[in-house]
Length: 435
Ligand code: ATP
Ligand code: MG
Image (cartoon, rainbow, N blue to C red; front, side, top):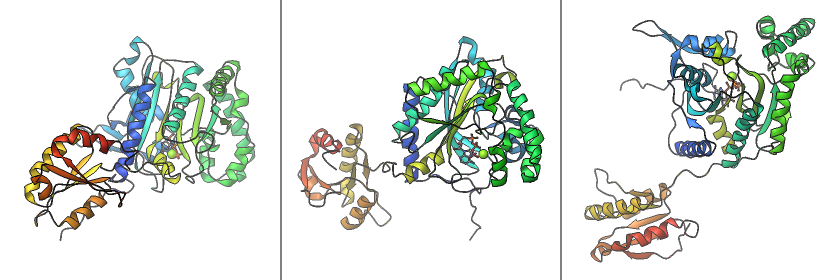
């Protein structure tokens, strides 16, 4: 026996029946995006390392310790598996001059990579849905992207304010942050004895991140720290009030969290997270905000932007915890073929049924042949099909097929003429009255 090769730690295979949940979720996402006028983008998974170092900020967790970076073996280029989606979308926007004719509403779905300690809700390859709205400065688009998330929750059967909670903050503009930063450093220095090593290190490089610490002692000091919100000038405040007003008008409950900061340095003004208490420490399902400086920072003509990223694994875990994931796609019918002569007619009938929209699976034979009726029915049950179609010799001799419910054992069997496939397809598809 040769050695077995396992997958990479923290990177998961997505297999049936779970893959059906993902297909369902992604289809709901695409449907919402279309209704909101957002356009899909697909950018490469590999980008130049410099894009993330410059875009996310050198002293962020992601850039300091979480990136999968490597040199191209053939030409030595420094490359990185994307840890997030925004930088790549912004690079593409600049490279293809996408804002030439005005703003753009974009979305993406795909894998991201971060070298973190794998645990429930935290993986090394994970998947995000994200939106980026580029080119518009006003609080209306901030409110819009948040409302879009609410629409997604509703599409998936989640209730905002119950299953998921919106937290909101404003980081103001760079000058406001600089003034706050001085006050923050002074505050932390005065309480240096209560800080852990991580916080002491961050204190001068990125003091805002200390507010985000998970360490209880540091959290206590952060609790009494000067609030960035108190440093906002009139324009920033008006922007924040604008976002709040529109959320309130649309009936979105939220909580202002003055300590909400995000893991990337590119944010300004509005930042937000949708959180849940059902997933332990991995409670942030969706996070985002405004990033007006990033396009210029990456070499583009200055333009405002706002966006968010949502973790699909965490969203699936949340839906599962709440029992809201629909059953994975089960076929409508499973065709039982007692002997080889039935395969041809069954294939013809199923082909017609599928064209009419029926989900149909044909029993496949093993080396030993098609197997007994009993074993075929076991397969039919395992497939979770609603009905078995029995293509027996009797039936075929009469130009018929037997339809048997697999869900209601006492339901009578029915014989149908093969020629009337259209009619029985209609009955099979009327699922509500025919469970
Ligand atoms: P956290 O604080 O949990 O580390 P984050 O602030 O690093 O999250 P973002 O970079 O804002 O997360 O990414 C947006 C979303 O992507 C998160 O809210 C989360 O749902 C998801 N996410 C981030 N990192 C991971 C990961 N390693 N595994 C699974 N999902 C993740
Ligand atoms: Mg993180």
